[in-house]
Image: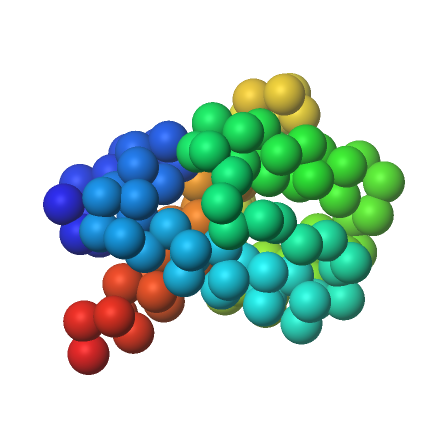
Length: 117
């Protein structure tokens, strides 16, 4: 599948799993979390649905209580600003999965390219 065929976080993480790059994806996310000064570390061996739930909870907490850290994470991960602005959702419950996908998609790009080239 590579970079173009995934349409949500679950598909993306499953693709990373299939390509044996889930651990690298989680390592990249952890690295960027630490660069953004967010004291959170995900375990590499988490089952995919558990990882996505935990990641969503962390993002929800950042958006609700630590907005500056959330913005810093988007900057460190290098999520394009226009993609965030294109999210029309105002309900936090529906916004978080969309933001999670954008973050994971960008992290996946980094990992996928490092693995290929």
